[in-house]
Image 1 (tube, rainbow, N blue to C red):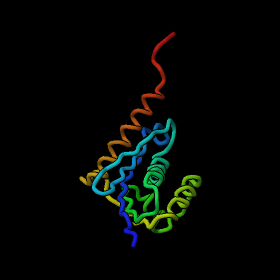
Image 2 (image 1 turned 90 degrees about the horizontal axis):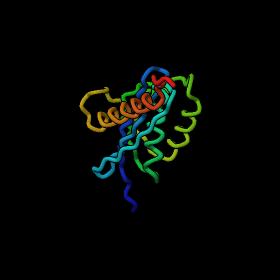
Image 3 (image 1 turned 180 degrees about the vertical axis):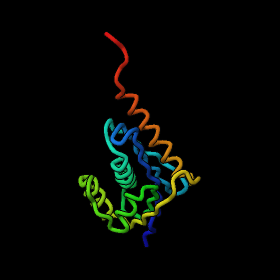
Length: 144
């Protein structure tokens, strides 16, 4: 008998302006160990960052497993669990749907800044990535 490996993924997206420079983070918890995955985009929206965080988290875990995804995004969680209408970001929804087919996923909404360690860590990483993106793409104040 093959034992199913349980994985928790804490996700968050951040944006400096909406649209604006953004960051995403997925904190994967496996066997009590946390693995951080994060990235940024120069011009995006907060909702896109939330979706990319979930996509990148699933891409990071490999083979089929039971997964719980924790997010403070009602946009993400309610679209996946309550069938909210998808009016934008169709490219990312299609990608997420393809990935989600390979897992048994439980989607859990968590309040932001509520002291849940994985969620707090995801928030810090996503915010850091958004700030880095903002700095990288800020207009230079130097004159030639």
